[in-house]
Image (cartoon, rainbow, N blue to C red; front, side, top):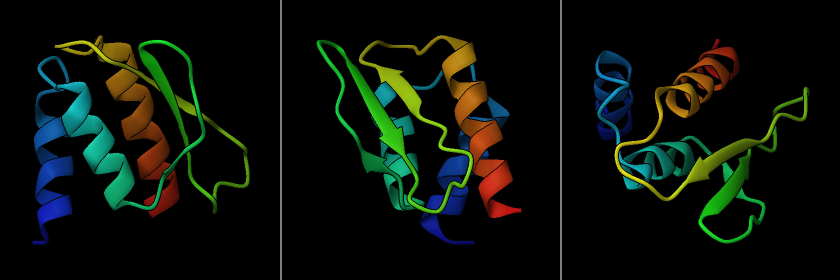
Length: 80
C-alpha cells in the first residue's frame, strides 16, 4: 500500500481528528491543485473532476468533520 493510500485510510478511519495539513497533503498527493482562497481558508480543485467541485479547507485543528467527509466523498468519486 502506497503512502498516500495509508494517509487516506487513516483519515477515513478517524475523520474527527484530522489536521488541515494532513488533509491538504492527501489532496495534493491525489492531484488536487490549490485554486486560491482568502484568509485562513484555501480552495482545492481536481483537474479531472467534471462536476467542478471545489473543496474548502480552513486552517484549524482539528478540522470540522464536515470538511473531512466532503473531501473523502469527492476522493471516493474520483477514484471510483
